[in-house]
Length: 280
Image (tube, rainbow, N blue to C red; front, side, top):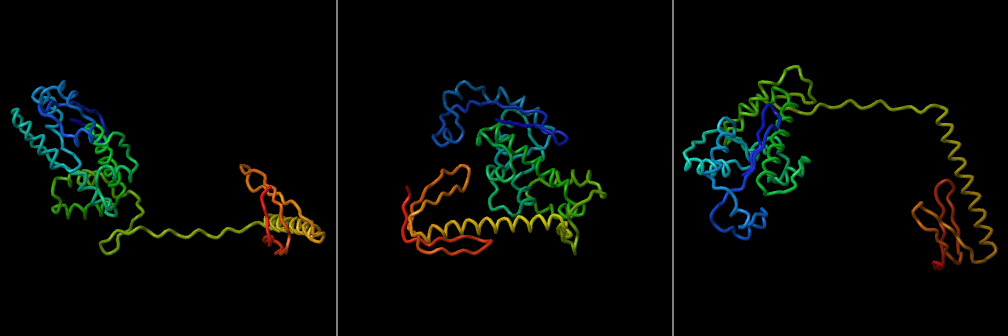
């Protein structure tokens, strides 16, 4: 059992405990959660922790990823111990489908990966609860960045939600200011991102342009001098060594080659067409 308590948009408390199920775990559960029968044999009975759990959740809103399973299971076990759980329910899967409609899948692991939420021990109670809390707060923060008109529109459609997930939208709507600047604009009931004005083209100073011209001229002079040296080797018809160092991390290579033809395009590149070569 893992519980994380949120108040005023912040995580303020957490609680975790094992519970003895009085039955052996199947291999799939052991592999998924890392639990063992030996560990759970030492865990408390649910009746021993039911009061603590009920006190933590009775006055709050029950938030979970696929909330139906967790809430129904907990309510059933609490009922057997004499506690009646009637808290509203918010499903983070349902909210994620509304606020991140572009995603293909909505399991907790994928959502955490997409939003940069840490989930170091997936399928363990407290780790999943912490990740769900962070996911909930992330979506809540996104709501605050939306125009109030858009939140109002979402609330008008909230009857289509399966759970009381509208409650967080309503909370943000009531706190949201009309004066907040947004990068969205309403067009016939749709909220579209505002077009950003293009930056004015930058003009280079005359000095900078002159410096660039001088650098290009120097590069051409170097290439021409290098080509002249190579041409002298070619005229002699001898084998020559061409040394090349491309990057600091690259070792110097000596290539012995038989020259055949030299072609040069000044200011752009040099091309050597070789009949044969081998690396010495």
